[in-house]
Length: 113
Image 1 (tube, rainbow, N blue to C red):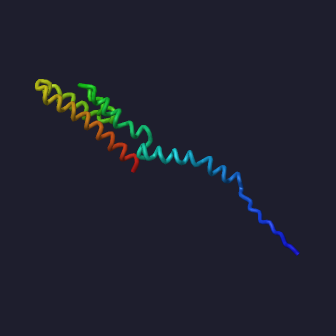
Image 2: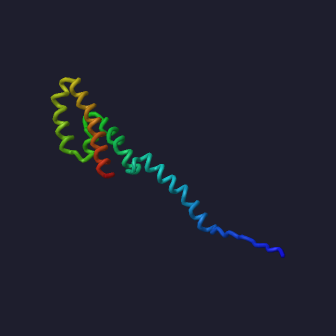
Image 3: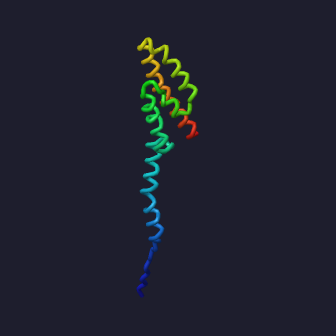
């Protein structure tokens, strides 16, 4: 007497497909978080945009963009006497670019915490 037994293994295909469908999305999401440091596209571009705006001479647009209107006004008033000595005015202008970038980076860091 021979006994044959069959073993069947049922794998739910729908569940496997559902997991596989979501993996690329999850992978893309994780890569996006790593690229943008978890603050999104706007968070990573904000310091760059702020520095570019601050690079416009005489206007201190980077400080206005960071909502530091008082600082921008003060620096506008400070540049009047500094314009007499062009070296000091260039120093203020370069520092304003750095300051705008730094403040935008600080504000983004405070959002992510």
